[in-house]
Amino acid sequence: MLNKPYTLPVQIQTIHRIGPKLDLYVPRVVNAPNAAAQTNINNAIAKEVQSMLKQLGYVPNSKTTEINGFYEVKTNERGLLSIALNIYGYTEHAAHGLTLLKSLTFDITTGNVYSLGDLFAPGSDYVKRISDIVKAQIAERGIETLQPFTSIRPDQDYYVADKAIVVYFQLYEITPYVFGFPMFPISVYSLQDIIPDSSPIQPMTIND
Image (cartoon, rainbow, N blue to C red):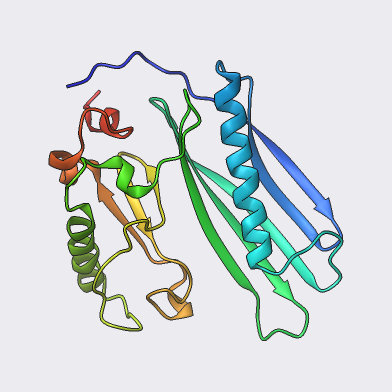
């Protein structure tokens, strides 16, 4: 077991971006002990927000696309920051709007962003392990899928919350619109055998 020194949560400031057809709340890390890590985190958040706006068809001073958005802090402890960005866009004359949900999980001491595969031991078949759990939850919860579910992507969307990895899918990715964002919480303890000491979520497996 790897004993890491205690790390305080980072401070989060809410930035309210307002403009023509734009009403957006985004997070920004402030007063972090490591200035370089703070810059990396904030740059990654800004880049993700811009990518989401582009996907929704928004450009500065847009006259046709309306944007509303907010964020949620899912984890801010034990050296890990996991946030979710929720942005809705509606373009005039479209049948309906579209919401995107994207998340970022950071090492607050370095600012590194972790993809799903970074959480597990190299060579571990985390894709199959998680896919099997998702498949079982789909059956248990009676979730209607557009096609029979087979597997997550290696870079599947996820966030960390309450000692769980929450794997989720975009609207229409595997389910009809009425199901919203299908989310599948997976306890870190059920995957503990493939979580190495070097994993950013290893501290989550400690009962304290």
